[in-house]
Length: 323
Ligand code: F6P
Image (cartoon, rainbow, N blue to C red):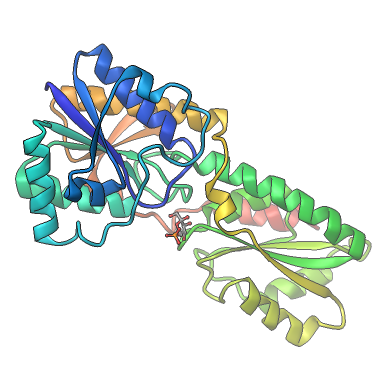
């Protein structure tokens, strides 16, 4: 393999830059030249390619976002889009592709790789941590630390005013950000789509809790079935508006930004490094993951969302610890 390409696709996540750096430097070490594709699959279709050298990735490790930019491409799902993408790769003599993104990225990669028998390897970059085949995805650790920092601040004001706060966090239809950050901030309750908890039952449990603990933090995953934070606030207000002064806080896209944590930088470096060596070893249509500290390879077809796979003991623990 003489030349490979790398792109980032889907929602950005902190650590993507560290992954790009690892891909570039590992390729150079193996005397493989590397091009970056701007704006994900859209840039692949438009032929938006840039040559990457060792110095192109200097000083990016600590930066959030992605130096290659990203997009959720609507054109890549079409046959014409994929054909144009393949044509551009051939035109630039690219023999292998590394895609950094989430499950939408891998679905596209799987289809594309099968259609043109083109080697593609994926690195999981998403704050949601909702993929099979890796213990953690690039960006998740930074995102939960961002949530913890924000909610600690909310706790200060909640405590001063004796208020109940409903804090909505990201995670599309997975509750992993909510669960882990909720434990980290000592939330009184966590609502996630995987468990389908009834809001009124949750409130009755809080009512039975300590009376000397005036502030309450409820962490809600954006994909929660009962609705987003505002809808849940309405349900609570119906029964408990006399008891609680309720406020809503939606953390939003700040969860996707910021300098990556050391965990994410190391994870991203290992995955980018392994992705290049996987391509060189003739592997394709697989996502690089790390399971129990070791590199793992999962076929794209299996690296889909795992939305039910949460440890119920953790939620039981939250109920006990927040009494
Ligand atoms: O997949 C990452 C994520 O941040 C989800 O948690 C969220 O639902 C989604 O992306 C938001 O996407 P966008 O930035 O395109 O609105």
